[in-house]
Length: 256
Image (cartoon, rainbow, N blue to C red; front, side):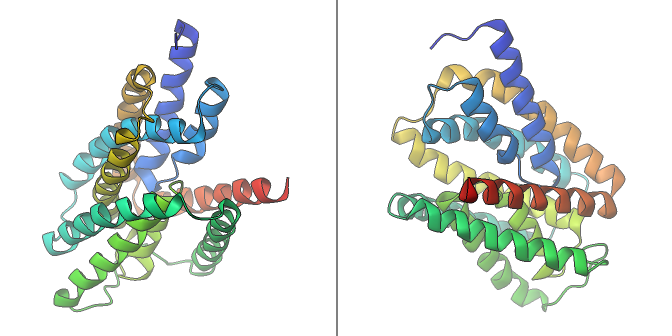
């Protein structure tokens, strides 16, 4: 595959937008997957996902680094979440090969509707910390969230970061900013695991990874910096927008 200058720039821009959105509340795949399939129609869906995940690992790593150097996160939360996400994501990829795609789409749609309604009705959700567990039980909660969302990452993919942010906010009582920080680190682990399976299956299109990586890393840095600067209310607003976009996308795919 050859890529001309215009296509190279458009691919980098798609990577930038995905990185910017994903670094705040997740959901970068909403932008990148359709963009990749439209810009490079010869790619299969698995090739598009594997190729863009190559860039998202690096971009999300930039966002995680930016969050973690500015926000204090307890190790007993972040490390177990990352390990659980890493382990569960590989299993999710294997199950994805056997599942009915329509069942997966309905599952995503149902989850997103619940997320949107709950967040919209709880006006104060995630604006301040309301820790729900004793510290020694928070490790178990973090493992549960990491494993569940890691499995989802391998099974379905798009929206993983968004669902992970919601889980840390609603289940553990973290605020949106700290939840975004933890989810970025755990998402890197989940992406790395599922990407390795896709890489070994030969789905990565390396020529397209360069513009994607450049765009995604820049977008991730700017997005995470803006989230840190603007705070909880900004992240909550972006979260609702992304969840509604996920609902619209899944409904369109199922009904059209």
